Length: 485
Image (cartoon, rainbow, N blue to C red; front, top):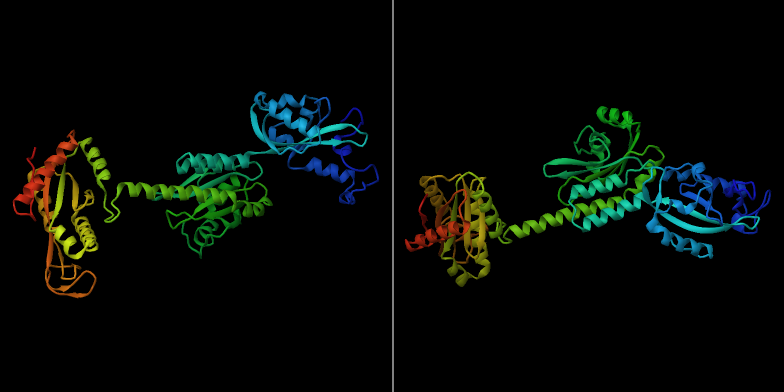
C-alpha cells in the first residue's frame, strides 16, 4: 500500500484512470485492473521502490528469493543487495532514474535464508497518475542461464564428462521445470546423473526397440522427443513417479558420437502443462550442451588413442609400451619383452616402393596380433621395429616358446608385383588376384629379455636389443634369449 495514494502500486503505475483508457492505442483494450493483474501474476518478480529507496510493492513471484511480498514492503531496497554489488546496482538504478534503459545485469540479492543468489535485474522507472516517481525492478531467476554458462565454462576447462553432465542436470532442475537427469553410455554400462532416481531416468526396460511401447525404449530407438504420462510407463518406473507426485515425463534423445545409443535428457515437470514447453525448450540449448560435452569426450578419446597408437598399423606405440612396462615392473608378476626387427624389409622399399613397405608392416602387425595372447601388448616402435610385452613369462622355456611363436608368425612373402601373399607358394595374393611364385620374403629376428618386478626399464630394453642383434648375427629369421634371471 502506498501511503500517499492509498492504492497498490501495481494499480496506479499503469496508464489511464478509473473507467478510462490512455491515448496510446496499445492500451486501448487494457484497463488498469487488467494491467495490475498482469503485474501481480508475472512469473518475473516485480519490485517497486519509491524515491526514498523503500519497497512499496512486490508481487508473489518474489518467492524465488524465499520472501513473501509482505516481508519486503516497507524495507530498504538496497539492504538486499550484496555489498560487493552495491556500486553496480547504484549505477544501474541512477541510469533508470534518468529514463535510460540499462541492460539487465546479474546482481546478488539476499534471500530469506540469508544466502545471496545471483539474479537478473532489469531496472526501469514509472510515474503514477498523481505524478509520483518510482523505480520498478524486474527480478528474474537466473538459475537456468547460470547452469548453461557455468557448464560451458566447466567443459572448456576440461571437466570430466560425468561431472559436466551432473552440473547441467542439477542446474536445470528447478521448481517450475521439475527434476532432471541425463542418462548416457559410459564404457559398457549406462550411467545416470542429475536429481532423479535411476529408474525415472532409465525406465523399466532398455530394449531400444521401435516396436516397444515403453516411452524410454521408444525415445532411444527412434531418437524422437517423447512426452509420456505414468500410465505409459512400466510398473516400476510408474510407481516411483507416483511416490514423488510426478505424472508427466519429457524424454529428449541426444546423439552420442561414442556409441550407437543416444544419451537421454529426462525431465519430470510438476505441472503437466509444462511438458509441451519443455518438449521444445530442451531440444535447444540443453541438448546442444549435452551434445557438446559428448563430442568433447569422443574427441578426447580419439586424441588419447592417437597419442598411444601407431597410425599405420593401429598397434600400440612406444609411449604405450613403456607405460605398460612401467606397470609391469611395479607389479608382482614376471613378464618378458620381445624386440623384433624385420629382415629383408629394405629390399621391399627399394624394389616396390614405400606403399608396398607399408602393406608389409600392416601384414606383420596382423600376424603378431594373431599369435599374441589377450594379455599381451603388441607395439610398433617405429620403422620396421616391433615389440611384444608378454605377461606371465617366468622361465626360459616359456620365453623360448614366445620367441619361436613370433619368428614363425612373421614371415611375409610378396609376389613379383609387390603384393603380399597368403603363403610362400604360387597362388592367390591377399588382394584376391592370381600371382606367380614369391620373389621377396620378409622375416623377423627376435630378442627376448625378462622383465621382473622392480627392473630398470632401460636395462630391460638394452638386454632385448642385444638379444635381437645376436639373433641377426646368428642368421636372421630366428630368435635369441637374453640371460635369464
